[in-house]
Image 1 (cartoon, rainbow over the protein chains, first blue to last red):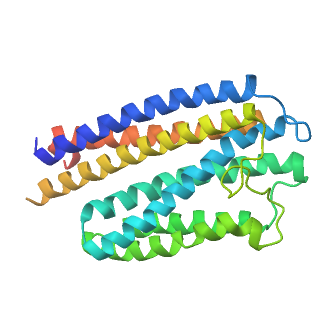
Image 2: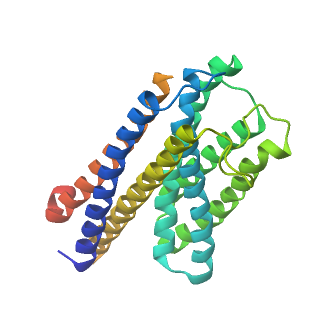
Length: 232
Length: 38
């Protein structure tokens, strides 16, 4: 077994532990949110979607922002580790974005009376999702590592430019989407019991992001080691 | 509301399974390269 493969398997093992801890913590978040966090007066049960929707949105935006940053650094430095990380983060970001785009409408139906509306934030998030799906398809279509790295880095940077627009869309446009309650310049606007659950959820899903990215990075290393040994 | 929790759990567990099966297949191929290319 090559040293690269051993290193990849070590990374995968480390990431697997992170995922296991994060999934156990996520189960705890479910219990905390459903059984030990008070009901919101106006929205009732539907508001509880917030504890899984907002942290998934945070993890997706974190993932896509890091794609842009590492892609820019890859174009500058040419270090393949940066490209590998960008690819891993993009795939994980798409998974989190899928959670955002499916849990949002389940909240929208009882509160807005419709599953979907072409609101600025919803539409931009859907575009972001499709853009990064395209990014992943592009990576599979290109076989030369250098060409794949450069082309996908450009797409990754362009996709990341949407992230600040999505965050600011509730201020820039007339939108139905609720204003931020946590990621805003002023103090969080929610009771302490709800804030505690939300912060725990943010920490849990950030850990899950780290676990997913670590395993996905290790998997890329394994596939590269396999390609190298097949070509040798 | 419970549907949202179930949908999120299904997506996270499916992605975990996808990562697990891909890494398992890659490590199996690395142990037995002939099995991947008969």
